Image (tube, rainbow, N blue to C red; front, side):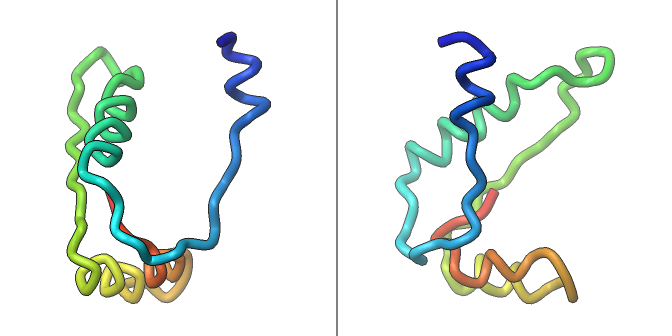
Length: 77
């Protein structure tokens, strides 16, 4: 698949079911995210997957704006 096809098929999700997310899907998403270029190839980014729904939903209440989507998510990275 060419990059232009990837960009055309890209979408944003703003509604979640709250269903748990498979660990393997989270691992794959994090692996792909960590392959993105970094400044001077420092690879300084660290990711954490949160699967405990109480904690995921609590993350959604941490900020006044912009994180409320997490209150319905099944996991967070």
